Length: 40
Image 1 (tube, one colour):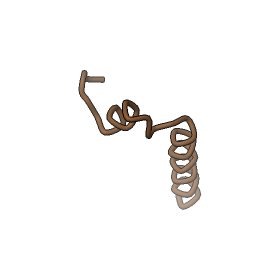
Image 2 (image 1 turned 180 degrees about the vertical axis):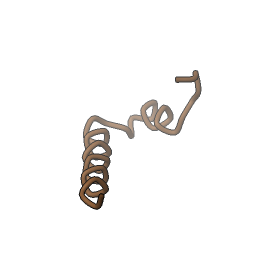
Image 3 (image 1 turned 60 degrees about the vertical axis):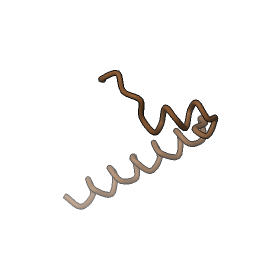
Image 4 (image 1 turned 120 degrees about the vertical axis):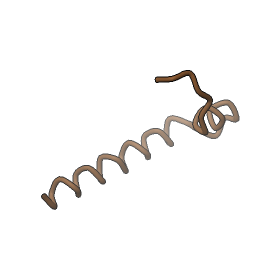
């Protein structure tokens, strides 16, 4: 990964990106992958 400042970095520094947010993103990604795989 390149050394870049991202939106997630900004949210983390502001205290707006918490463990619950990470869990939500991962859950949505898993749901998206599961629904895409079931369509194949």
